[in-house]
Amino acid sequence: MKYNKIVIAGGNGYLGTVFSRYYAPLSEKVLLLSRKAAPAKDNITTEVWDGREEGAWGHQLEGADLLINLCGKNVNCRYTTKNRHAIIASRITPTKLLGKVIRRLQTPPRLWINVTSATIYRHAEDHGQDEWNGEVGTGFSVEVCQQWEATFFETATPTTRKIALRMGIVLGAEDGVFPRLLRLVKWGLGGKQGNGRQMVSWIHEQDAARTTEWLLRNKTPDGVFNCTAPQPVSNAELMRTIRTEAGINIGIPTPEWLLECGARLIGTETELILKSRWVLPNRLIKSGYPFLYPDVQSATRAILQR
Image (tube, rainbow, N blue to C red; front, side, top):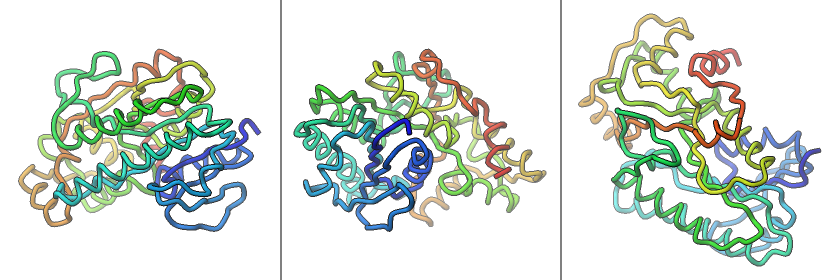
C-alpha cells in the first residue's frame, strides 16, 4: 500500500465515490466523513459527523496522508435567499471546523485539498483563464467561491500543506453531468444550448482523482490549482462529440428562452449551462501531470465504453 489513510469529508456523493474507489487499492484505509451512517465496504469506512461540531471523528484525522474536503450543498437549485444561505454555510462551516481540528492534532494530515470550483473565473469567450492571470468574475456563484477559498487559506495549518482545487465539470458514466447530457442526446435533444459558444471546462473523473494523488506525491506545491482538462471545448462541440460517439445523428438545439423556462420548472439556474467557463490547468501542465484524457473525444469514448 502506498498510503496509510485517506480522509474524504462529504464523501458520500458522486465525486466522493469516485475518489474513494480510486484510493481504496492504494491505501490501508479510506475514511468518509458523512452525515449518514453506512456499512463498511472492504477498507472504506464511514464516520458520522454533522460538519458543524467537533466530535469523535476528529481523532480519525491523525496520521492521514490526505484530507479532501468535498462539503457543499449542490448549486443545482434556484438562488433564493434560503438557498444562497445554505450554499454558503454548507461550505464555510465545515471548512472552518476542519481547520480548527487540524490545528489541535499531533500528527495532522500531510495535505489538505479543498475542492472548490472553476466557476470563480469570469464569463470568458475571448481567452482562457489560468491560475496566474485568470480574472475573477462577479455574481453569486463567484462570491461563494471567494468566501470559501478565503476561509480555507486564512486557517493556519503550519504542518499541513493546503491546495484549493478549482474543479471543472466532472464527466463520468454513473452520475454528474454526463448521464444527463447523454439522455438529451438519446432523446434527439442534444443540440447546442443557447448560442453554443460558451466554453466548457471539463475533466474526466479518473483524471480528477489522479490529480489529487499527483499533488500528494509532489510534496512542495500549494495554493490554487485548476483541475480541468487541457482542451476545453464549446458547448456546441461538446454536444456534437457526444452525439457522434453515441451514434445519434439528430440534435435539436435549445434556445436560451427555453432553457430559462425549463430552469424555472425544474428549480435550477441557467448560469450552470450558459456561463462560459474557459479555464486552463496551467499549473498542472507545468508540473508535468500526464492527463489520461486530454481531449473530450477520448473522454467521451471511454465513458460510453464502460
